Amino acid sequence: MPDPLQTLEPVTGVGLPALKNEMMLPAVLDPWAGHALYEAANLAKKVPGSKVYLVSLGQKAKLQQVMMTIAQKVSFELVAIDGPASGFTDAHEVAPALAAAIMAIPGIDKSRLLLFGGWESASRGAGATMQILGEILGITDQFEGVDEITVQDDGSFQVLERVEGGKHQVSTCAGTPAVLGWATGNLGEPRNDPQVGMANMRTVMPALQRAKPAKVAAEGVLYGRVELPKQQRNTRIVKDMPADQIAREIIEWISQK
Amino acid sequence: METILFVTSTEADGTLNRHALEALGTAVDTAVSLPGSPLVVGLFGEKIEAAANSIANCGAVRFLGVEGAEFTQARYATDAAALEMLCRASKATLVIAPATSRMARVIAGVSHRLNGRIDTHVNAIATSNDQVAITRWFYRQRMFSELTRTQRPWLLSVDSGCHTAYQGESQNVDIELLPIVLGSDHLRTKVAGFKAPSADQQTIRPDADLLFVTGAGWTKKQKDGQTHPKEAEQLILGFLRETKASLGGSKSLVDMSGEGEQVLQFMSHLNQVGQTGATPRHPKGLSTCCHGEEPHVVGWRFIRERRAVNLDPNCGWARGKADVLYVADAFEVVAKVNALLAEKHSTVNA
Image (tube, rainbow over all chains, first blue to last red):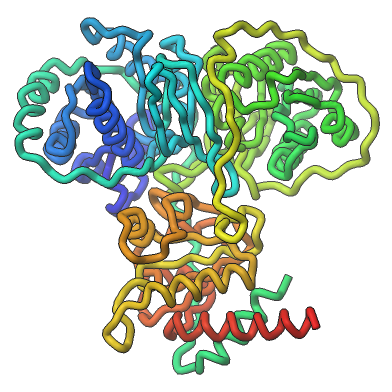
């Protein structure tokens, strides 16, 4: 997705709204998807025989750009799908494209699958793709807003999901397969490791060359005008007021109903 | 003409929470604005009678329910089965639900089962000439659009704080309970409970009147050239204790806390507001020591009245975004606020 730290301005696109200079904007791995990837890699290290596949939908050139950033972080095998990574596409079209790519992975055993992804994207923020993807793959143990997974010796695992009021719901699942839509998790961003990068890049470039185009849009959706919020407040700037007086003013303001 | 289903889970005590009542308010208004469109209520949970009775006069023509011990727990497999059954039985073309964590976990998956479509985080539903349109934000509250869809059923989960909560007289209603057969596959996941910080460490309060946003400035060197993380921690927790505010933090601050630095140990990623954090809705917001431009400022997009305390009069977080910017030292101001409030509270208690 376009780096969220950039200025994002909507424009009328072909069929769907788009972002101004979208192709020029630097691309990043969606933040929550990134957390999911790091958690997957961390788990795979602890469970022998595990392998991490990164299934990613985006325009080829942008995917290549993203891989330059994340390939040095953790080990994975890329499965690339060539298509738009816009916030205006529909999860009901994105999920089947991802599902087809997953099912085409040679030797994949769905019964032993832990499907990790971001609980929402930073583009559309719908929180829908992972659920639909799980449904397509027939996985009905699903968790959203996940911050922690702890795998037990018997293959069961405990999951902490975010719920209202800053709490976590604690669940135990009998075992794979399961869908986990990750929030931030508990891991920091891994440091760059050139050796991991070199190993990943051996499979990244062929994967990008093999990337199949996916027709992903938003059929049946009619967008009105996409707008930036225009709200500009006339900020009253208060300088040289003693802290005591500011405190009284703040208290009075807080107390007003 | 649509058939509108308002659907939600009940709370552990069998009632409906405020967010659910807000979504019901939206559903009622939508039904009224689309003549000839019946409203159906669908509830699921361990017990649903009290909840159904509490909204008896909302104008619904049918009350459907899925009830049982298996639906006490917020679990994807059982919740999705219940939701699917309620949607099918109602023959709804438009399904409106609150975007609670429980409903948000399943509603998109169920839309796939129904061969329908989903839109989440809906802020408003408007009707015109029998057409339904919704408003939602894109790119993490950076831009918004109205959109409509041709496909049905169209499932919508509505954000909190976007509509007044439904209020009405209670009355006994006839509930059509739907039988549902669950297999062992539905029960592979068991909810063990909830993990929450202890009461005095609980800093996220969604119903608070005030959001207190803290930025990385709290951890920077102060006038004496030293950092004062312990003092910052005491001041912030003191402010929360005196005001009952909810605590938000900038990404840089929660990242530092997550990395185990000696700063604000009570701060976690759950507190994060902004581009990659939450965008909570509170009537008022006070930010302190926050810096940043548009990507970060989205953290208080939905705060109605905003004030900021910052040493930089040109701070992008505040200028043009806040109603009032106090150019002052947050350490001094918050200490004064805490002292004055403590004094006020002790006087009241005496």
